[in-house]
Image (cartoon, rainbow, N blue to C red; front, side):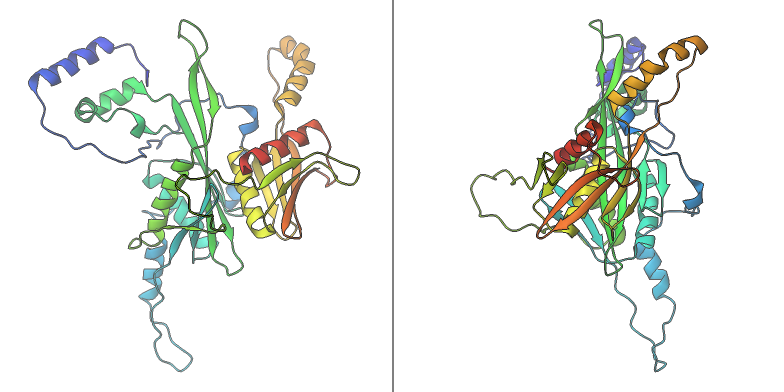
Length: 385
């Protein structure tokens, strides 16, 4: 927890007055999430490989008053009489089912509504938990939030309960979170919803602790699971979703064994380029690779499941540094720093029997053996393990 302001004396006096006067018992919340990002938070120095696409208003979903839920939409549809071919009214459709499936450390939400409807529910869900939307693309089924601070990580003591607004202005957790939701269409025209978390942490850069900078921190699967559980209740409010394990059951032991490694990074050989081999069929591997790209901070511009192709952008820090060094003279001469554009790549996901192979191609679809392509494969492999 870091102090934001220098009026600690006034805060101490106020806290002392509260303690001396005595306080009534106040229940402490147990929520793990308490975001407040109605307005964009303070600017973060985000690493270049986390750069995002500019917002494209062509695919913007029209604003709707109030939260949108699948159950409410279906309830409205059910209120309209439906006629069977014989002229008799049919039974109203059931409330959508929602279940969380799991394979290894990855979880996703399965709901029996079309992706267009699921996308609207996701979009209405985020503001309800204090997360503002930074980017949305209905064509790709992607909704991404701004960087936001989880206020639930601040001490939940009696002082904060009494003068919480004052403390919120004085202290910060030193952590920021960003979430990306991705809605996939299944063969049955239902939806699979994935959520990926990226985190930043504020660290001191001087021994005097007077300067700080933001650095990436590992993704938090527990936060992802919490958001999935809450989102599931938007689709089926009366249901209590339970995780369904899709991987093969392992023998029961007293201690939980580490999950087996299903992905391996293989170097190039005489007949094959460098690749990631996944011990799973295409359908499951496609989902895993998509989530790995989201967690890795890649910007997915498009995807083609039929061809097993993800079209991504990635800015290699070493490539960026070289270009900045080449531009150094002109940058100093004109007093401005030129923006380095991220490169475009294709991530190919191909089935080979019961396994799946992931390779990287350049923007023209040719095999890419550059060091940058190797870094992309290494990052995908790391996220898959």
